[in-house]
Length: 154
Image (tube, rainbow, N blue to C red; front, side, top):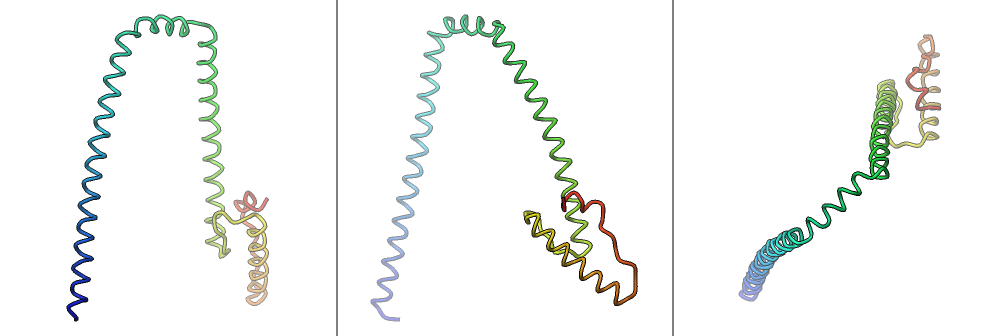
C-alpha cells in the first residue's frame, strides 16, 4: 500500500470521526432544547390556568349541563357501539375469508390474499381442469367445491 493511500484513509477516518462528533453534539443540543421547550410550555400552561381557570371552568360547566352537549355525548356513545358491532362483524367475515383461503391453499389452489376475484376464479378454473384430468386418470369421483370457497368465489 502506498503512503498516499494510507494518508487518504487516515483523512477519511478523521473526517468520519468529526462528523460523528458533530452529529452527537447536534443531538445533545436538540435534546436540551426539547426539554427546555416542554418546561416553558408547562410553565405557561400553569400560569394561564391560574388566571383563567375559574372563569372558563364556569363556562365549561354550563356547556356540560346543556341539552346539546348531552345529546352529542349520547350520539357519540351510540356511534361507538355501532362501530364496535360493525368491527366485530367485519372480523368474523375476515376470519371466514381467511379460512376459505387456507382451505383453497390446502386443496392445491395457488391463491394469495389480496388477489382479485377474477384472478381467484381463473385459478379455481385451472385447478378444476387439473382435478378433472387427475380424476379421469385415476378413475375416481371428481371433488366438489368446498362450501367455504363460495364466500370468496362470489
